Image (cartoon, rainbow, N blue to C red):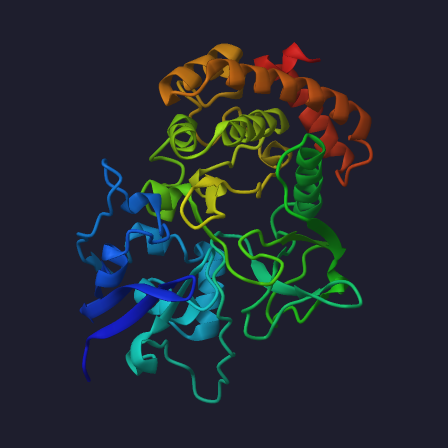
Length: 408
């Protein structure tokens, strides 16, 4: 059998590149000549932008893994193993996993086999005699948590398509390890919305309102969290986006290590406008106040609403993690420190200087966010979908954050 296979990479439905598997689990990404020479080309990733604003076109082959940009389109850990098992594909062989999942990726990318080529039989896991393989779910929602693409039902609630493709909502099921995670995320996202942040439509649904939950998925709670996909418009057309692990060209497992909030802020300052910067600061301050110790590189993204200019993408994955695991630090260094106890106006001034952001905008936005947070938190905390323990943990956490004392 010919060991060379090719996947076509499409952006907004137009071919812009190929990923070629050349045997021995090596693959190579390349842009098409048409994309390279198109001066009006849409942006695929800031990672492919050189120091002069030009397009990087020289890539090295990778072994087993894809390049970081494409690797970050694939789910991680639990979700990866679940979908790989459904598709009967080895989860570590990323070329073939992308082959199976490439029809519904984050952003405006689709990946399809060239010439309708069939998946080679040697990539499958062995199926035991008498076992009936499950139909693969052909979507990829990057991350670890079990979450599914879903469609709004006319009678209310959501249903998960059998194929997994085409949904305009993302449904996150309850955690087997931690209590009331859907309730926590819904509350934090709604609190962020009250503070004026750009938050997609969300729902907190009874598990009974989620149709077609796949067989084998355990039910560990009563509620599910759903968020409207912001990379799809009202007509269902894809809007391109990418996360900061893709932008910084690092693999998903490096999402806590290879960059800082200062690095993210510098990109937003260079690529976006002042409102993008203000939104970044609002979210940073908010997540420090609620004790979200898991805002890693993949929880920050940019979106290309006009296909060329990057702006900060709508908010997602806001959870008060200290309600489950005591922690004194954020996941990423802010500018000099990641400790909640070091989060001061001076730390934000340092971030502004190093990331070349307008200091007045940064500090004024931080002060306004803290003041508004205290007002809304005091008024709404008992009305949010939080357990009493979650409220108590956040109340206990707030005095440990120096910036929080400004508006208390």
